[in-house]
Image (tube, rainbow, N blue to C red):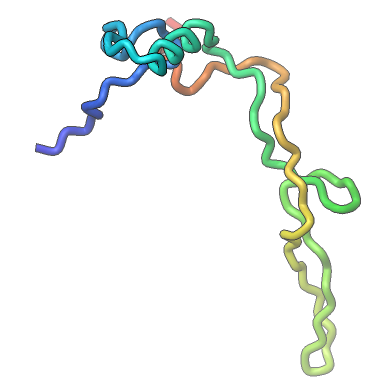
Length: 111
């Protein structure tokens, strides 16, 4: 009845062999390339994608707003309008301290 695990055997990103400790035996070039690439992988993350944006003036922030004046029934009211156009993402940012990758297959605890 409804199993929760995947039936497909994948390759762990930080080990040199398959998910169950078995080496890839299908002989395809793609699986060999994945195994070679995963042996050189590190469990540490040194960069991340930033969630900040640059606006037209070069300011850096998560969100940008513009104050607009709305006249309703002879009264002036200020509203903030969110700017979503002409924003440039900051891109990849180097971390000050390396973090451990989310998919690292070892539990780390302090006793």
